[in-house]
Image 1 (cartoon, rainbow, N blue to C red):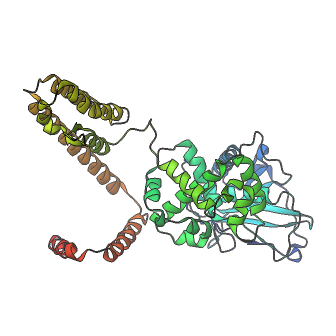
Image 2: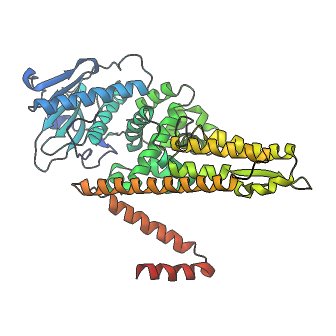
Image 3: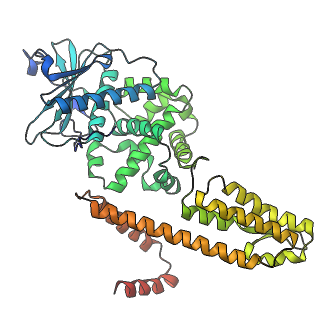
Length: 454
């Protein structure tokens, strides 16, 4: 849900955002500190989830309450729970307006010497980004689960929610709503070195804040794939619930904790990596209900428009449809066999091609039938007409995309930093190209490039 509130917040826990490392406060530091009475006039309570939002701005308070309720429901659904998680503690989300203060601060502190108090401070002095607020909400929800059986903490005891886990849970929920945005997973499948599993497991909140837009996108996708790969295991939802119960207080190698709760990961030395890679492959695979773009449809059509002709030795070779004259020397049975490969490919393509290409596919099938029947007088003209129509479609598609790009650029009112991320990616790819240069060819390419730049 996108409300009219755009939030820009930095999830940081005592100076280290999203790694969410908290050090328990000394009991002595809060002696005499008590939770004040909750004023009904400035609070919104989600009774089913035991979340109380406090703040004077009624509209903003209700929006935060709605987002917190939505995130709680999404987490319950992901973990496969029929009922809301039951715990005696109430989570308090308090709106504050402090200059120079951190935007969002999850906190866990002792309360009355025998319990823990979980709260999320939201600085509303500036606009708040919904995604980062959601991140903060899911962190405190995970803290409540992980500390359900804990009443006290040692002064130096560390509690933490891994950044990849909180981000991955949010992204997994988004993926279940819309699983068509697979482009980033296609890139990770082809180039897993763009963002490795080790990088995902070890990236802290500080690391994530320093990522450019490209690495941030890869980190989110990789975290999503890891969380979904865990949930998709046998008894994955129960395993994830148990994993969350342990991870908040866990100190050690994260892969060991994953293996403890997901036994199938122990199959082989690279079990976690295999599980993650298979999930990325599944997410990158196109669904039968997805339509190809015009460009993708045209490429697939070109690949399909080939006859399979066998020579005298029985070796089969593929020839483009423009060489239909080669079939005139074949018998009718051989023509049918040669054309059948093309017809099957075109029919399969019709299930996923862009709708504007379907009439063209029908015409190509009709032409193949005429070739088999020996009616080739007008085939050349019909093929040229189809080629011209395809070219016009691609030109119109490119013009449309250029116009949309122009519209998005001219309507922009703020600098997002995405372009700087693009430039850093461009520089990195240029460096990789330098390492893989073929001196016999690149000398000429560099000259061409210098002429273009001049």
